[in-house]
Length: 114
Length: 114
Image (cartoon, rainbow over all chains, first blue to last red; front, side, top):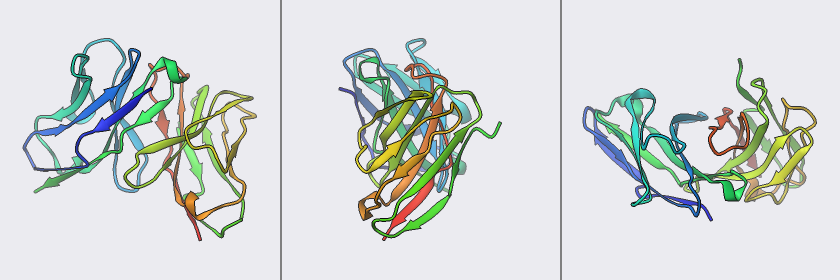
């Protein structure tokens, strides 16, 4: 079975400092992994995805994530937080043995302090 | 392209009423899906479709029906609304059901059942 654990429900950072949002996954097969962002009262926007190519994935708005199979992790990072990064972030896993369905983590709310 | 569109944006129903949430996409995507988002639970899959005429259940299908007569449209029907169906509903589409393709999300429908 597939599952995703987002280790922090809330993260606060100061503007200009690094962002780290943690995600661990469980999958019996080689998965694809995604990070989505949801701004208040909006839909979900794809930040980046890992689909078995390069393990370091770069996304939009300066975000990147590294797939670490040995640690079953896919943490999201950004070197310098901006006020506009304040949002809810979801880690998502998809794998072939479950009809390629998306399994969402419970989300991490990022607050950026000016 | 409009992408994925959903109507209505907001809806209030009384217990026992029925209604249909509309979803349309103009990207010629094969795969479409419906999720519900509840606080602290991420998004959970209700139903999905891998092409016109083909639908299947997700994680939380009870109380909902779907059909897919065209590639573009994927309506979600609530048969007899219950307060437990108060949620935000998102429709999504993808090029195919492969794990390598991201899903594109609509703006959501906020449903309240009293």
